[in-house]
Every structure is written in C-alpha cells, then in structure tokens.
Image (cartoon, rainbow, N blue to C red; front, side, top):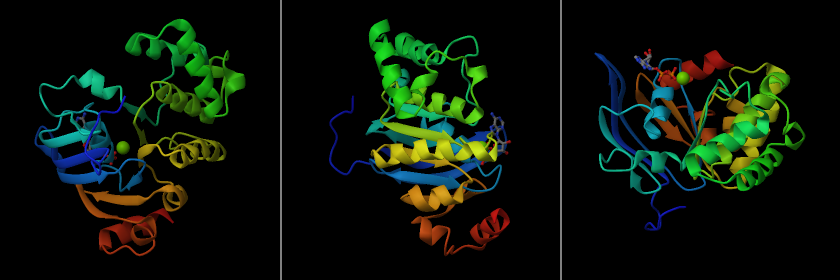
Length: 250
Ligand code: ADP
Ligand code: MG
C-alpha cells in the first residue's frame, strides 16, 4: 500500500499550515514532521487548535494555506485522489461513532466492503483479526450498546485498523471514558505503538505521553510552542505557557 519514496521521507509532514474559520485564525503557521513508526503526542489547552490540526492532516478540514503530506503524497495537491489517500489514514475520535444497529463485526466489515470493496469473507477475517488485536474477539456478535465505553472505543480502533492504515490519528480517544476504562484503551494504543504504527495522538494523558511518545508537541493559540522528547517538554518545559498548562493538569 505504501508508495516508493526516498529514505528519510517523513510519514506525515505539515508545512506552513494555516486554517481560519471566518475571521478566526485557528492555526497560524504549523510546521511538523513525523517519521515512520514515530509516536507524537499533541498537548495544549482547549481551543488551541489541536483537533483542527489533526483534521487538516486527513483533510477533514481544508487548510487555508500550507501543505500536508502523508507517506510522501501531498494531500493539499488539488489533483490528488483524496479518498485514496484518506484510506491510508485511520482516525479515532473522542466519540466512538459506532453504528448502534450493527453488531461489532458488522461495524468492522461495512467500511471495508464499501470503501475497499473487500468481499464478505475477507472483510470478516480482517475484522476477526483486528478484534483479537484489541482484545475483543469474544464481542464479535455483540451490539455496541451492550459494551462499556472503553470496549466501544477499542472497537472503533479495530474498525480503523481493519482498513490497513499507514498512520493513525487519535483525537482525545479516552476523554469521554470513565476513569476506570481509560487504561484498557491506552494499553491497546501502547501495543500499536510497539508494533511500529505511526501515530499522532491528541491527549491529556501525561503518563501515556511520557511513556509511549517519542515526541511531545505543545500547542497554544494555533502555534507549536514546544516540540521535543517527552522528558524535556513535560519534565523541563522551556516556555512559561507550557509550564502554566502543565501545572494546571497536575
Ligand atoms: P482544541 O482541539 O485544541 O480544543 P479546536 O481545534 O477544536 O481546539 O478549536 C480551535 C478553535 O477553532 C476554537 O476557537 C474553535 O471554536 C474553532 N473551531 C473549530 N472548528 C470550527 C468550525 N468547524 N467552525 C468554526 N470554528 C471552529
Ligand atoms: Mg479538540
């Protein structure tokens, strides 16, 4: 699925990205590179533009200016087949958005069949593999409403993985969960990271960021204020804005 590309090409590259909603400039010039297999956590106060940045990386939002590349393909090229590129990007939201009237397996097979044109048997096999991967093989025939929030979010992760993405984007995947359900979801994400998935994760889970991320990016007011190793950005922040944000989390 990945295209031939020169060694060292970042898996995700964002260059001079700006995004305005009307007069409100929400992203004010973002430059970011994420290497293959790298895990980058994005932190920052509410309204700082984290979700907008993530949504620009798969063109759910159209950038006002700047360029976005995934796997060496420019998404912001007007001639690109955006649906084809988007298939290479998995996205997991705070709200799981499972279809309530479909079983867990059907939730995983439907997009594979509709978007990738897989046949029923193949789609079911891939669904089963990915349910195993998130520890929910025994829930294959359950309906979403019978699952805990943490289990539903793991199904949403399996649904994204079943599409065979090259990169995974997570937007506060544990923020809607009761505290006791957060750990299982983070464990699945940690496993994905260990398997070498390229991941961009917006989160307030500082322990996860410290232990799993290769880099932490702190955003405020639509710019990247700091970008570095977790122990540096979280443990020894250089900027007052980062210090202030972190002190309020603890
Ligand atoms: P974060 O995820 O860091 O909380 P967001 O990216 O969601 O921040 O939002 C940043 C700013 O952009 C906020 O002021 C928000 O109101 C605004 N915004 C986000 N999405 C839209 C939209 N679709 N239309 C108008 N304003 C938006
Ligand atoms: Mg957000």
